Image (cartoon, rainbow, N blue to C red; front, side, top):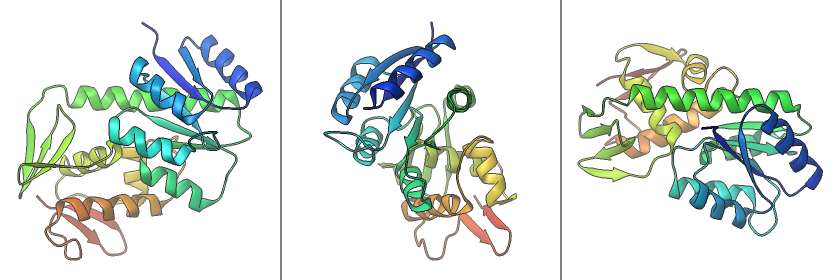
Amino acid sequence: MAETVLIVEDDPSILRGLQMNIGLEGFRTICAHDGEEALALVRSHNPDVILLDMMLPKMGGIDVIKQLRVDDQDTPIIVLSAKDQEGDKVLALSLGADDYVTKPFSVAEVVARIRAALRRRRRAKTSNGDGGAARFGSVELDLSGRRILVEGVEVDSTAREFDLIRFLHSHPGTVFSREQLMQQVWGPNHFGTVRTVDNFIARLRAKIEEDPDDPKHIETVRGVGYRFNP
């Protein structure tokens, strides 16, 4: 069965162009013209990836991302936006978007990013398919459920946060630069800066470390990057 792409875009010409070209690539497409319709379609159709414009009627893109990540932490979200300021990109990514494409864009680039997001999702499902849990300190990673639990209580986390702590946990004692983490966790086609990694590390520390200011598990290696200590 063809994988489903939800396109959320209120500009009719952009929407038609994306729908036609993404459909020609073998994907099934469904479309929403505003944020509220997008949330309804996610719940009823369970798409495999979401293309989300930021400037939407009824509910803006940022609010849509927030609500989507409450309901669904795993489905990749690729932002399409005319805003190209670093702050806008960092905000969207830190709230749970997986990628950010600025307008004007080429449809070929968007399709490539869709395929990359789906590959990462399939790899994550495969790597976690054996179920079980990984534990360190008071933290448990529910691999099949893709949940983070601290002292048995689930903490709110995004799909990217889980991917990041799962990757670090899989390589204890290895020092990774921010660029390496961006490459391994976000993927080679992801737009972002090393500040994105720092933001996610800070959020993870706040959730799993007893003292986020003196972390025991996600260590900073000054001048290099980060290391996981189980």
